[in-house]
Image (cartoon, rainbow, N blue to C red; front, top):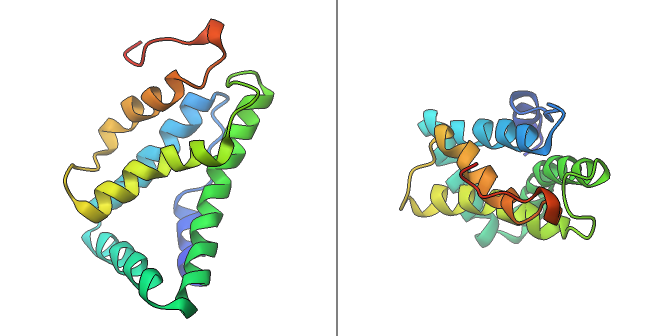
Length: 140
């Protein structure tokens, strides 16, 4: 898990485009690109399964997951400070909204994880999180 943590951190560094939409779009696009590597997809599925079955593996796996969650939480907190998102944002729940489609689609396989879909997915999540005067429809 330590090696995987380092490899993922190098492949997916924390973006800083100047906007939350840009940051999350870059992050989610990179996240979805895992589908171009079938071995990585199988590894992620296996790691998730093992974490459910092996109590000794659960904590290292969660530490890795939390390291990626921390990146997204940092992006969201930075956006709150810039006034891009509502000040009372539930950061933990919003991180779940970002990673939920990834894990669900990766594990269930009912829908594709297409990097080209990342901008629309991010836009949908952010549509409800902007201050009222800045809210816009996800298709804008």
